[in-house]
Image (tube, rainbow, N blue to C red):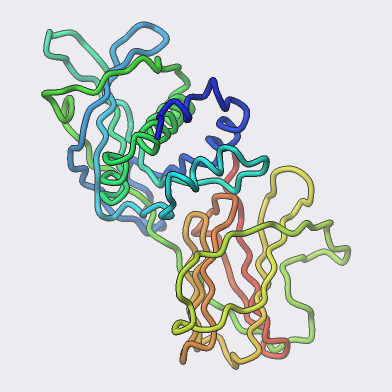
Length: 305
């Protein structure tokens, strides 16, 4: 496929809309507090990109890999181009960890800046085989570095032929997935997280279910995701999942990823794996299971833009 199909000039509005959701940066390139569960990323070199910033200073971007960086959804070139052509793209996120800038010296002895960007090896391999994914990834990476460091990068870049990285690759720290404690409720109150007597206006949020053979894993339960406030960017999301075959919280597990809910139950009664259109504050998510209504309510604060 012609890589020029992914140039911003040709799909500018849709491309930029999709880019807003694509670079799913994993928080934390510096050691987090002891309260937040984390893991260390040790980057392995892939290739190095050379460009310049808006001050005409040399910038090198070390594209690296690490097994403990989450994998993005496995989509085809056709799927990606379909998202670009869609009037309402659901987004394609590339989990990546963008490290802090580090001062280095290039081969001519001149000062420069290097960034380490770490992705999962499977996506790196896919990108190396597809110019479509590579063009998209490099643009997303540049957008992420610009946003994080308040600078502009030239898109007139070159891949170094004889060097896989510039400088010393830095260890990075990322949050691990949060597994919220599921609290049981006997109660007579209806499920949800609204504390005021007047419930806020809410709006249902569209989700994307991971496509795979779920028959052996369990039935997909009925659920809905709502956002509050209803208009604009939400402060939090609430998932209400109906589990009539489940008797208590001990018989299920819930994992909350950066933009994902994974629910499993004993005896494979239910299985739910969905992606959300927003990034979550994982460590602040909570869950309650109402034994009278058999409804699991998950409260998920949304990362600020």
